[in-house]
Length: 243
Image 1 (tube, rainbow, N blue to C red):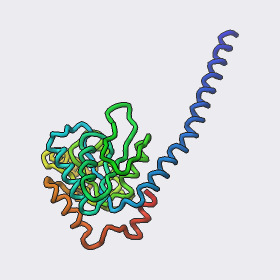
Image 2 (image 1 turned 120 degrees about the horizontal axis):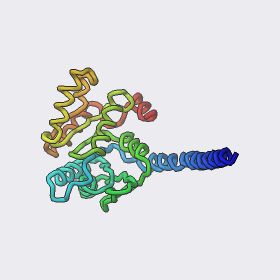
Image 3 (image 1 turned 30 degrees about the vertical axis):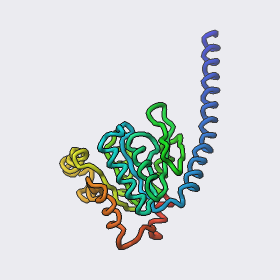
């Protein structure tokens, strides 16, 4: 009888714990909503914009850092808002270069247990707790993605935009990889393994452009929009609304 009593007590305690967690999860919805609302309100006017990605671990004296800074400055001077993850490394270089130009420097920061600390070169700064809300902000207003060498986070953002464009959940935009040697192994794997295995189509590789020179990055983006302008079509606006 005593064993049944102990079991019942444990069951009640487990139920109470589960109820508390469920209650916390329900209230979490409002925190998530607030991140989306603030993001939509503060970023609506930044277009045309370019989202740029790369490693948080790149030191300031590295060629990748200097390349990111130059690309961002060129884009900013050309009239783009330039968006980064707001952290150190290449993200810092991006915001620094953008702030040295004429356009807004935007940082979409994320709260992490380690590694992420905001850089001081942001004209517009938002901080997110949830990666998925932050991801939407990177994609929703971007006229192009520029991806410099980076790790898992950079690859995550790259695969995210490729998946969204491939599946028609986001409009087609230039996706530019910078520094050919860094990306060669991945692209060879796409071409020599994924395509033959039938897990992607050969034309999916056309989503990517690989460049090395900062000026070529700017030129490629302008060339893509030369005959249509940067404003999304009515169909593209609907796609982005349902992102």
